[in-house]
Length: 87
Image 1 (tube, helix red, strand yellow):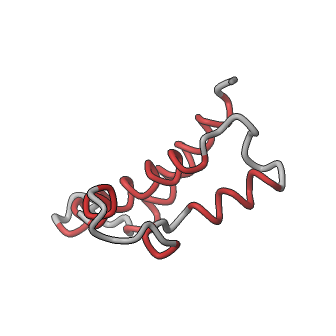
Image 2 (cartoon, one colour):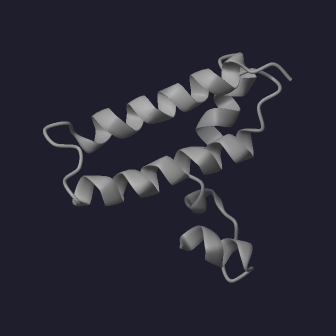
């Protein structure tokens, strides 16, 4: 929802709205993310995982697994996949 307000121009697109952008940009500069990766898009996708993860966690669908365990694993898989795709 916050993202929709940013896209509609209702809020400034600042660092607080992007939880992964700076981290991913540094990782790309350090060579840990491939140069062809669109960091802004990857950050958006990771944020979607967090948002959806909260919903699933709140609904109890993770069982005994923690929110962090599930969502961090999903985001790691997303990053690994993007790193393997060639430009």
